Length: 537
View (tube, helix red, strand yellow):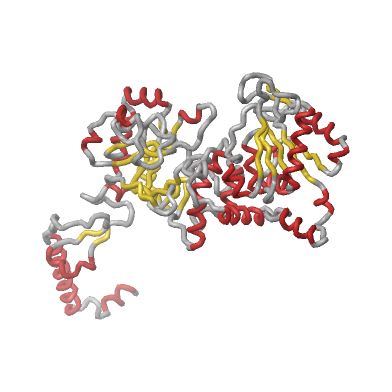
């Protein structure tokens, strides 16, 4: 019987009951004392911290502070960036006013002995949207938001309007006539300067009606215009700018400036930036197979630096703690002596020859000549002169009419029995590797003037290049570049008035420089004769 068992136990004896009662009284007193302790609300909360120390009497045991949560905390008086997400060295601000103030610095010339590569600090970059509507379209122009505390600049209502044109401006301090109109520096080639005290100030400034009209008039409408969010990249970043629509321009405007720095970084086994961003073409270094991107990828142009993915968002502004700017066009004409040398260009091409597994080395013709002098032969293919042709007929650009007819007639001539005439139907339909192979196997290249001639870097030393058109303006044909390539170049253009039938020139369909054209059989035969002679020297 349970009642009897409890009644007979010692659990409820008088002594035990007294002890329990005393314990309850002590607990009640302790609870009352704790609830009446004064909290010092003036105790500081560390900025960005999630802890607070309670009471002056606990000052000696601050390690026992109370934690209110690791992420979802309320912090009084903390910096605004405490509410900002950060991932992979990028800070994401959902509102521009949450950013801490920035003061821009630079440009600082990265290497005084080379030039062309500049470092900016705490700047933002925009895209020129009007350039995408130009003819021809341009994808390499950027706006640079430069933050300053200079009140004279901030009082200028046009401080955020980019200059109409920055071509020809070598360096930040180059003068432009437009500075008198806008009241601020224009920037440098490819990079249009805009000034503001903050992101919010810049966004408000460019949204003013009079400034919007001025940007439209100048062809300088920027994106984004209405900034909602900001991405701040905290790692040193390289700004990759090039013209997606013209590989020849890209190679000379961007790569010829960067190659000396690339060699320096490789020799020292250290690249000064951790990431690369290209607003010219998304995924340039990762998944895009654009010709120029493929070249950069194959030479490991930026070392271990990772490409930053970006999204086309008209309300997001990209800003950078440190931004490396490779000045567009700095070495376009190779007029900076001793920067791009024969050894440097040779090293660059040798890497490409290996990466694309090209069958003929750069010094193929020299090796062939040495073998011939020793009575040796490098193979039956060397008994022929191989010339590749391209008429551009499958494109919407300038076309060489009746080129196939001229080639067919030339093939029938006895003097060309040791000449192989090879035509390329559509270069744009070939992979970069296929284009490289076709140029590498050629002894001479005769093509309609155009960017496809950039594949000259895959040709062996001593190759002859001929560009044909009503008007030929070529960067490849620069005598300095041909000297670096140990090659020869010829431009064949519109026949002048009074030209005789033996002149190597073209007959154009109209007076337009980009008109379709043809060539007489005599002119074509004289062209081939001249090319064969150049290869025999």
